[in-house]
Length: 75
Ligand SMILES: [Zn+2]
Image (cartoon, rainbow, N blue to C red; front, side, top):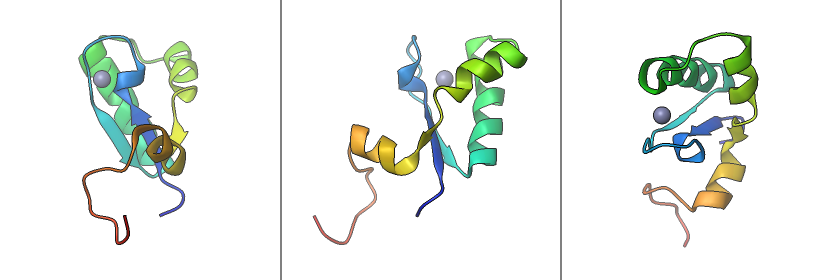
C-alpha cells in the first residue's frame, strides 16, 4: 500500500541485514532505536540527519530489491 517507508540496514556498512518497514513515523523511530542499540550510534541531530537520507518509499525499495516473499496475485 502507498505511504509506507523502508529503512534497509544493508545500505549501511556492516553485516546488519535488518529491514524496517512501516509508516514513516514507525520506521523512523524503529530505525533510530535500532541504530543506537545495535550499531552503537548516538542519537542526536547528526544521526537523524544521516538516517533521513536512507528512508525510502516502499515502492522504490521494492523496485530496487525485488518483491518480498509474500505472494503477489500476478507474477
Ligand atoms: Zn542495523
